[in-house]
Length: 145
Image 1 (tube, rainbow, N blue to C red):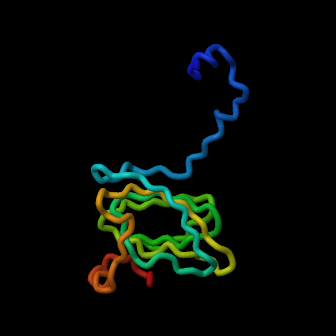
Image 2: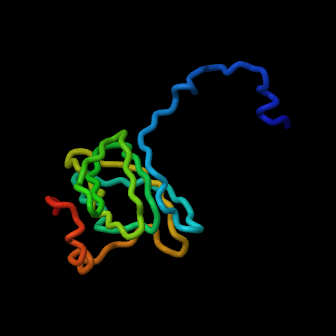
Image 3: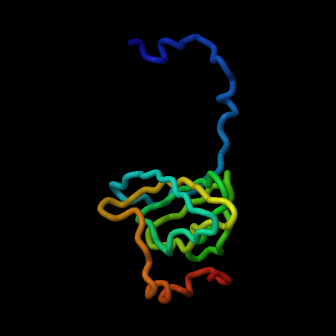
């Protein structure tokens, strides 16, 4: 079977749509990716008003995109912010607490996708216990719960 290049050599594209088909929604300096990491893409769905995952951390960086609704997003050292459908977010992973990823709305669900790089032999998500939250409360941005 001939390869694609030889079958299309010299032919004009059927459409020029590819030239404007990409929209950049987020750019980030390359974060640390653990050696031997594997990538995992998940979809998270929370019902209206759901507070989301308890405070946690990831073993490697995570990149996300809100598909529907609005998510409250808060990382250690940063104020909470709302990420709406069509917007992206990311976190470096490692020793950074992810405080909030819940639904900002009480009338519609939130649905987002996350691609994360997981350190070998470690879970993709580790909950943070109450004692550690107290020890690190000075690292949380002012004005958050």
